[in-house]
Length: 186
Image (tube, rainbow, N blue to C red; front, side):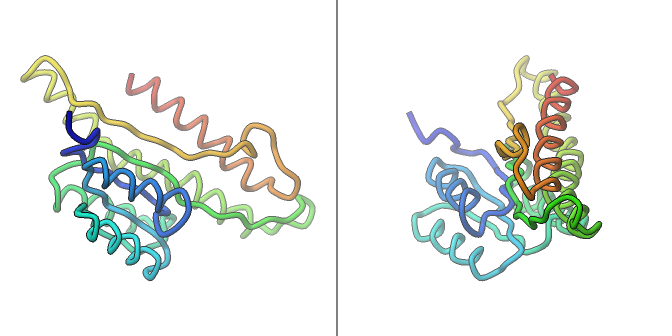
């Protein structure tokens, strides 16, 4: 049996460090071609170099996931470079803490945009390359290749956390978004 993700194309946001970087390296080691994103080019370049050195395939997209142009670049890179999208990992994120009564509108909106709105945009943009492709496969072969969307949340989204009203709301929203998408696509 070969690598688990051989021939699959994955988009992973927030892949310059932490969970995203680890996922990118693991996916590539398991045979996936990865389109990886981060706001910071230097750590992203190091992850790409690690993947290439290990014999994997990776394409970087530097940009802010809350910018619709980054969504278009991620989808376009996956489709133009490797012909489609099999896996989407919504991982990008950070915290900008502050107690609720002192939290600015900018703190609130920035965290929602990075964690939740960007995931919504990516899921929506990936639809024709995942769902419609699967439908066509079913029509021609009777079965579809497995495709997945993974949205990284947090216990803050289910339990709350002091000073993280913005982050907790975004992560709870991400859970609801993902569950709704699963029902609609299921």
